[in-house]
Image (cartoon, rainbow, N blue to C red; front, side, top):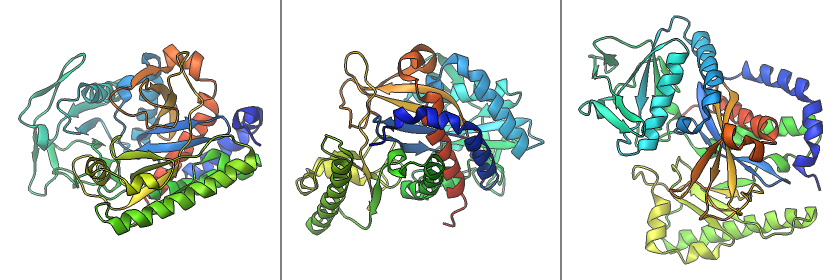
Length: 400
């Protein structure tokens, strides 16, 4: 069996070839201004398990990484908006989430470090004046809309609107101008996780061929179960059968490779979930016996949007553990398509297969914990995260 960690030397020997390949691929798609990627590393398999176009955890990166991040912001903005001097940050409305407010404050700092003016605000936040963050208040700028619905700050149009709102509930006021990045159509009201994995698969296949390894080792298996209403017994029965068949296929692969553990799958909304509406399953029986509470949790994404398509994804158990046995997963932060910062999500109340993105999680940045968990940060983890950014770029070319 191929153990991904055991072929790290092969990856390093192909570094120049992969860099040249990556450079060519980045010319084919619009590279996102930023993004974050959750990686799961089982040792025998390393894969992207979530990719966020509107990252909300810049406050968790190490201070030492801010210089590299701001430099990449400058590179991206000057390339895509050559005359830009002023960036306006359009945030979510998480006025009670102090961690998110610190994320916005950190992005503003990065934009300013890159040499741009940076204002913050949205029509939804206009009456607040400021937001209370962990490190202190964050000043909001008063915004208005012109007759065409475009956003104005102090009566003027910003050169670039940097969107940090995932638009789960649909587009919002002030997002009609062409100078918005990421583009609003990449919000979860239109984007689908399955689209990302469809785009990612092609890139993973190419890299696997270059390395002469089975692409199975670099990506979770997945499928989409469409048009399911979990309140209907017939839909649940059909879904349970699909899940059992999928798990059986994974078990066959495990058996062939000598992997001694029972497979599991992760069921999540095909739209963004913000860590909600996620369920780990070892058989379809759990779907047949869902409580109303769990059904409602799975049926609604962040903000209360109804969903009826579900991404069923092979679970990748993390082999990364603290000394106390707490599961750890790397989160990679990227700007202009390049991995530039890492932190580690640790959750003492979860298992090695569970979704770790819950209130009980804590975060340790690369500066403090990279020597413990970061052996593959600049290798496999960075490679897969950067492939994910290529996939995001390819997604933006999908007609919706």
